[in-house]
Length: 159
Image (cartoon, one colour):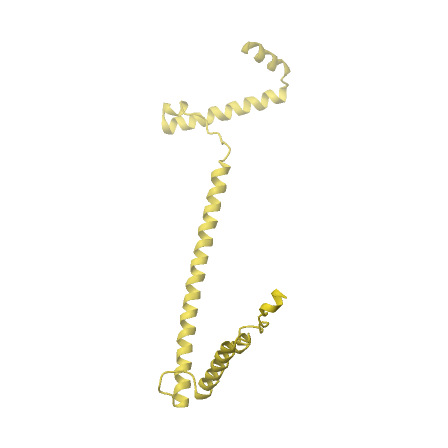
């Protein structure tokens, strides 16, 4: 059966195709001969090198893992820089606070002056009074939003 296929292929082959095929066979023979000089007889036993399809899934996952590692590294670097920035701002804030205290003669260690303390105390008192009265205005006094409406009386529900 193989001989019939060979005979049919030989009949169908034109001179140009036959010459091309002969050239390829000669090239393979010359390469094997050169390898035989270097490697010896084992060169004839070796399979010819053929390129197979690359493992696309492996390559895709490798690229994705490298991209993820790079992104993670950049994120870690960003958080490190942010931490340094916060530390720098904190040091700068403490230095400004110390300068302000020295300028105002405040040695108690607090950053608030008397006017700010009085204003805060007044706001707290107003919020406490509004809360004690139950008017719902304590939200305004505390600065937490708009005033709540007064609670309805029981007569509204029963009536």
